[in-house]
Image (cartoon, rainbow, N blue to C red; front, side, top):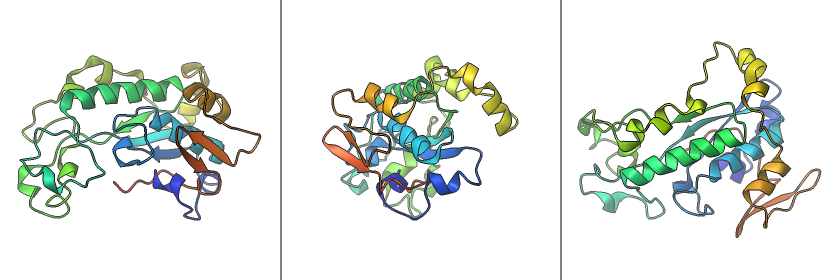
Length: 225
């Protein structure tokens, strides 16, 4: 996500020369400009910009949310800018995020992550201070499933069930599976109909009160959570 907020001298346009497809990560809990900590539309917004800048299809390779019941009463160590969700809230966000990415025709999505960290690791860096990092899993540290893992709308979502052995197969099947694939202009007009300004090569895309500039939007999906 930061790769679209900062100029890191390696963007989707450069990566597209050697990549079959591009990736993006996104977490509304880390985005100061997101509408909320459960802003599911943040994900297709980042993906659309990546696809526009690189001219290649995008796999949303990481998203998720930390949950609160198993922070072991150490929430004081959570950064002030990070909001930890309750498990039902996280499950609803996950479903809405998958629906949004599927709606705008992305190749697929990966959730971070399978399970919470084991208690034996909680006292080690970085989990001793960044306590929210312990609990991004779909399963808890005791191997019990969280609501998101039990909901058919999440685990059986079509965006998570793509089966391709090679990227070329993904592209061959892509048009039929994602007939609603859209351009940046079309996508942003749908996401933010009253606040988008676009042109043939837009220099600024407005998102609510915040904005991402074309100059800073140079990056491939590597996120430092």
